[in-house]
Length: 396
Image (cartoon, rainbow, N blue to C red; front, side, top):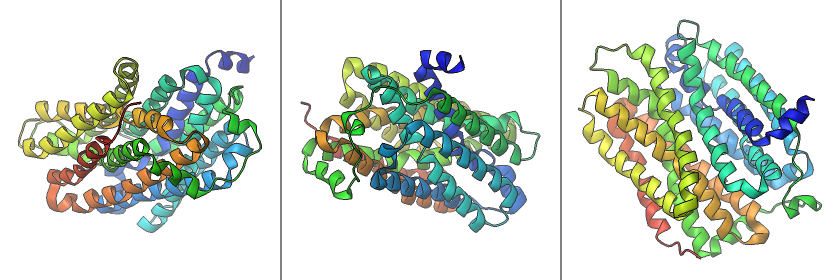
C-alpha cells in the first residue's frame, strides 16, 4: 500500500530523498562555531574538512563509473545503502573525532557515500520521468542545493543544544531518505545502454567528447562554475558573520538562519532556471546566471564597507545565481556529447569539475584569515574563464 502511494508521485519521493541524503554534505559547516570552540579548529581546518568530502565524492564517482556498479545493480539499492552508510559516518564523526586528521578521514568516507546518492538520484529521475527529465533534473539539483543549506537550518533549530545534535538529525534524515527510495524502487524507463549487459567504462571514452567543440565549450563553462560554487557555499557563514559584525544584531543566532536562506534560495534559482530554459534555452540561462554570479563576485569585496541591509540581499542574489546554471550545463553537455558516450562524458566532466572545487576551497579557506572578504576575488576566475569558454558554443 505504501509503495502504491509512493509510486503515484515518484519525483516528489526522489527529490525528498535527495534533500535528506545530501544534508550530510555540509553538516560540519552548519556547526562550525561550536565545533571550532570545542576542538580549537581554525578556518583552514574547515577548508580541509570540506576538501575531504569533495575528494571522497570524486573518488566515489570515478569508482562507480569505472566499475559499472551503477549499471549492474539497482539504483535504488545503491542510493539506499549509500544513505545508510553515510548516516553511520555522520554519527561516527560525533563520537570519534578528536583531531583534524580523524575528522578528515571520516568526512572523506562520507564523500564516498554521497557519490552513491547524488548521481544515482539522477538515474532514478530518468528511470521514472523520462519525458520530463530536464525539468526534473532542475528540481533534483534544487534539492541538492537545499540539502546543502539544511545543516544551517538544523543548527538554527538546535542553537541552544550541543553542536553534535544537527549531525545526528542529518544522519536520521539520510536514513529516512534511503528508506523512501528503497520503498519506491527503480522506474521502468531506463536508457538503452542500461537495459543491455553492462560494460566497464573506460576513462578514454569520456575524453572522446572533448573533440567536439560544443562539448569543450560547455565543459569549460561547467568547470568555471564548479570553481566558484562550492567555495562560495563554504564561505557563506563567514560572509554572513562579516556582514553582521558592525550591527547590534546577534551574529551567533542569525548566522545559521541567514546561511540557510542564502544557500537555500539557490533551489529557487534552479527551478526558475529550468522554467526559463523552456522559453530562452539552456545556453541563455547558463551564460546569464554565470555572468551575474561573476559580477557579484567582483563587486562584493568592494562593497564590504556597506551596511548589512545591502550586503545580505546581495549574498541572497549571489546564492540564486551561483547554482542556477548547473542543470543547464548538464543538459547542454548531454546534448553535445557523442550519443554512444554520453554517460562516460558526463562522468568525466563531473569528476574534473568537482576536482576543481578542491584548489578553490583550499585557496579561499587558507587566505580568509589574511585577506578576509577580499579572498572571494579568488573565485572570480571561474565565471570569467567559464564565460570565455562558452563563447565557443554554437547552438545546433
